[in-house]
Length: 170
Image 1 (tube, rainbow, N blue to C red):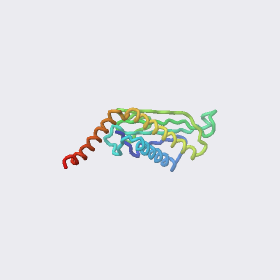
Image 2 (cartoon, rainbow, N blue to C red; image 1 turned 90 degrees about the vertical axis):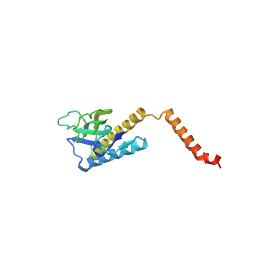
Image 3 (cartoon, helix red, strand yellow; image 1 turned 120 degrees about the vertical axis):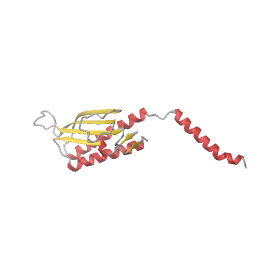
Image 4 (cartoon, rainbow, N blue to C red; image 1 turned 135 degrees about the vertical axis):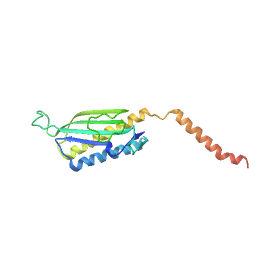
C-alpha cells in the first residue's frame, strides 16, 4: 500500500526564489497526487512512519544564469523531477534513494520560464506528470484480474441466494 503525506512532495530551487509560490506548488502537486490515487482506486494511507510504500516526489530546478551559461535563452532552468516509493524516511536529502525502493522514475531537461508565474506553472506540471506516471505504473502492476471479477460474482450470487433462501421455507 502506498503512503502519502505533506512531506511526500519536495521542491528545491537554486538561483531562483518562489517564496509563497513554492508552497503553492507543493500543495497543488500533493492535491493532484491524492486525487489521482483516489480516481485510479490506488489504495494509500497517510500515516507513513512505518510505511514501506512511502511516496516521495522531488522537484528540483536551477536557474541558468546567462552570465555563466552562455547561449541559453533568458529565463532558462534545468530541472529534475523524480518519484520514488520505498521505506519512509524523514527529511530526505535531495538525490537520496529511499531504502527498499519499489518504484523510481526520473526525468530531466531544460525549460524556459521568463516569469515566476510560468516557473510555478511549469514546476506544478512536472510534479503532475510524475503523479500520472506513478498511478499508471501502479495500475499496470496491480491489474484487476478475471479471477477477481469471478470471485466477486460468486460472492454476490451466494449473498443473493442466502437472502432468498427463507422464501422457500415459508
